[in-house]
Amino acid sequence: MKVEIRDGKVHIHGYVNAVDRFSLPLPDRAGKTFIEKITPGTFRRAIDSADDIGIMLNHERKLTSVKKSGATLKEDNIGLLFDGEFSDPEIIEAAREKKLRGWSFGFIPTKTQDKESDRDGIDYERTVSEMELHEISIIDSKKTPAYPATSVEIRTTEQEFDYGAPENEPQQKRAQAERHRQKLRRKRLELLKQL
Image (cartoon, rainbow, N blue to C red):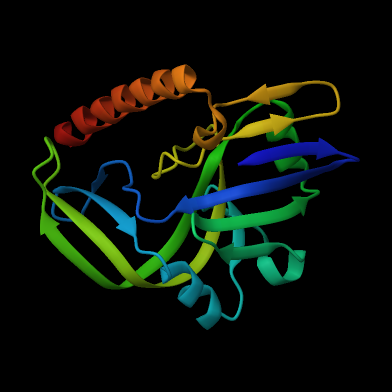
């Protein structure tokens, strides 16, 4: 996600989710741990069937909606792509303070396929092929995105901050960031096992 602060507004452009990439480990209601991915075309169908899609902060506060804001939300060959501007003071402040962490999305899966996983600490893998997409959320430092491919790059007129968006990292930096993400995943799995 690229964030540019200019003229009292925050312009955000980037991927809410990359299709066919697994999430971080998630707990289900039965106490099992799973990872999930969204198949190509699922977001496009969900957008086409929705009247409007909300835009929220941390799944808690509604900022606007895609239609009301004039933002663009579409699925391309990489994933769910967003482009839009915000004048919300909390979003502007979070961007200036480098507290924006990525994206998340609120949905109801309507068609899934689960299979047993051979990955350590993961009980099963879920593939979502149909959904009702209700909202997308900008995630700040209070939450952690469930999908690791939604990192942040912030630009202001004064200086540039790079949070390591995977598609823009040099090879060495990308490998370092992946090691860090794996370490965070292991810690999250340990925490989940304690629940």
